[in-house]
Length: 382
Image 1 (cartoon, helix red, strand yellow):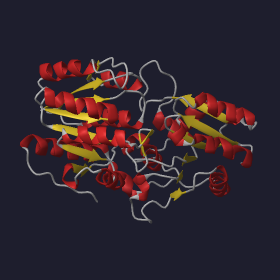
Image 2 (tube, rainbow, N blue to C red):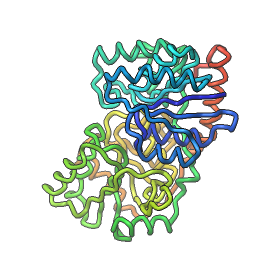
Image 3 (spheres, rainbow, N blue to C red):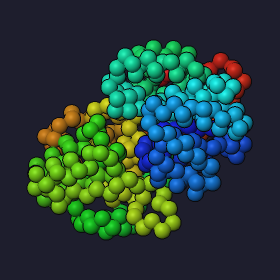
Image 4 (tube, rainbow, N blue to C red):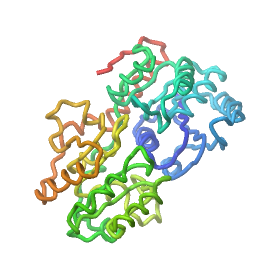
């Protein structure tokens, strides 16, 4: 079985990291190549290190139609059985190219659709029309949560064309380690006795990391904020920190991979999670909330505003996670509650194992087989 994965970019975002984890755990009989339309980055480097062939299409922008014939030729010459697309632009161009190349077995993963946004885009009639046009050219769309499946149905995607397969990761990779905690703190100059609140994700307006910066004046002086990620809001966040007089309490790591490449001395994501004391996720619009699940696997308490990874579960399934309104006062209040209780015992909820990447890889291969055989899909929206 030959599968071509098409993705918009390969920087260190949640969808990109999820793709790398999936490809690392698919069985040998599933041969995969990856095409990135734009911006090969840390994840592209990681995929190549894993032995995956990665091609950069060099697309100049959303309307660079010259990329379409290049993508069609690539699919035809590759002899692929399945085309699997990820993220909005890749889903649109990839589905069209697959049909033009004669591949009807097309699967799309919807990582970023919510009730109000699609990858930070406002949900306009034009965006919706293009989305549904592309969707009709595929066979099935994977929603990463029941909430995501509901959003797809609300947009007009038939339930019979939706399959829920959660985001997966390797829980053993994120197991708490005190040695990694100390090394990561030392690398970024975080005092060993500091209380570290962290936000993980792209530094974009929708993540609302300015809320976390705004909590610092209300928190004890030994509280530090660790922001893991990069993006266009980086300068604005630094400016806010300086204006509030807390710049010396904010550490920004930039993008960090799960496993650093040889020669990269900076800690990877599992090391950074061990270095944290609480994960805070003030984003108001999330399709899943991968960082939340990874934090739970490390035994961290989690404060979140929107995270279907937790909110779709029964209320008592994750006692270490608490939903908080998106505001600096509200987050400061909850951090103070956890700060007063420290040192807290690290407890990993049982639900973490349900999202093991091994389980997700098996479900994905089953879906590939069903799509290739043109068999009716078993739709499990809940």
